Image (cartoon, rainbow, N blue to C red; front, side):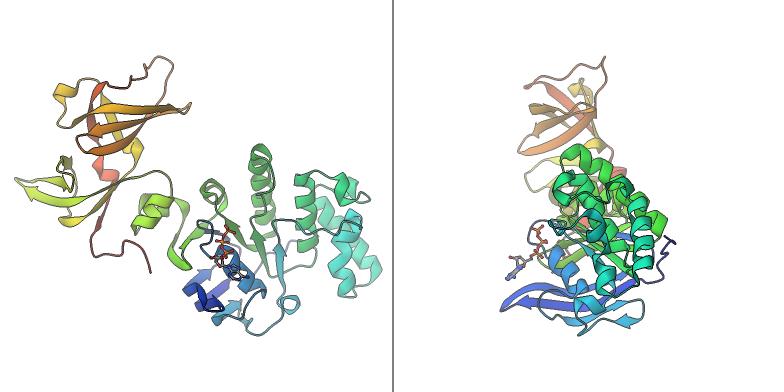
Length: 362
Ligand SMILES: Nc1ncnc2c1ncn2[C@@H]1O[C@H](COP(=O)(O)OP(=O)(O)OP(=O)(O)O)[C@@H](O)[C@H]1O
């Protein structure tokens, strides 16, 4: 199979979609680059699948524009869009062999038989299933069925590939293996791909960029690192990884800044900002010292979780509970509940979201 090397990006412009009177997508704007692996990430019900299905041409007619390359897809039925979609359930025909499943779209398009055989073999070889061509789907593992679904989609040379939670039916270790295979295949083909998932690790480990959705609104778009390190609102900060979100006022005096928490405590913070808002502080950016007297800030360990590479502590600092992750080493003792500790905050890596700035895109 010749490599696809997509030239088509995807533009979504001011898209609105409702099911009856229920608004599901509001003002969605996205520019997905040709060849990009892009993820839609968000909690259940945030509208990820609805947005993907709208691009594929399924579901209610949206308002706004969807373009693949410079083709406006408005009003086109799914089969005229030249987009390839892989569903969560794989949707293989149970009564057809692997070969026939993969050939199905080409037969429908009335491609000559000799060419079909060639293309099907190339697609099966690409996903490593050439030796399974005569098997029925029920004789395959979940991962193999998923690869058949992929082969069936890419054999038709779509302009873009849309994947709706494609790994969610697989067990945890196979999911990790399949997401690597999926990414390798996407890179080989250079095919513009959108991957829907509610699993942030899956999005983080595959996507060039992603859009975080909540309540049908795109909250932020960027690379996984950008969204994690520089969240623009509290939803994104809280959804991507664990964060301490501390509401209060940053006050500067004598050249130093302190965060006066709403709960009454003060934290020394290395930040130029002032005013009220919320400080987003990742658990790994706080360290604990056993010498609480020497520390400006101290608290008591109220809970701990051994996570292998790290130990997660909940530390009560007066009325505020702070999550702290400490990397674990064999020779490092684990602190007991009730232990008094000092906290040192690496606030350079903290993000301050001023109140009034969007706490949640709406
Ligand atoms: N056919 C439908 N009729 C009415 N409402 C629907 C329909 N399909 C989806 N919805 C609603 O649209 C909203 C978005 O659903 P969608 O499936 O797009 O979310 P999602 O982010 O993909 O969630 P999940 O991760 O659970 O699949 C939900 O509130 C859902 O109840």
